[in-house]
Length: 157
Image (tube, rainbow, N blue to C red; front, side):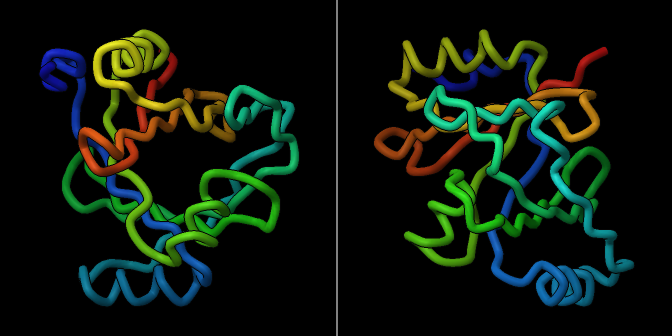
């Protein structure tokens, strides 16, 4: 089993943190990196995002986010979830604030997720479309093999 073979056409894109206070946290990270404080945006509405948690529609799962560009093509994502069930809320409740996922930009998120599930035992958690409808994301847990959660990002052309 070689994850590089599965995500061979992918590109490392992001480290995501779940936080309780996005305004405070984004100011601190901006100070650390010496950059402008990024805007906060919402995740979009369910009619566009079509968020699904463990395969079931989750119309009330939402968050606000902020993105800090670290290098070209690599971001730090800050996520403050609402109080409704989601993998963000579950993580915050169980582990507190901190790293939530590492993300890869892939050409076909569904196929990559399928291969990670079949070949590495990844557990599907949550998926949805970007708030503007320009792409999709899938969260997979790989605790037993990689000790973390992966996010697959696919931009629609």
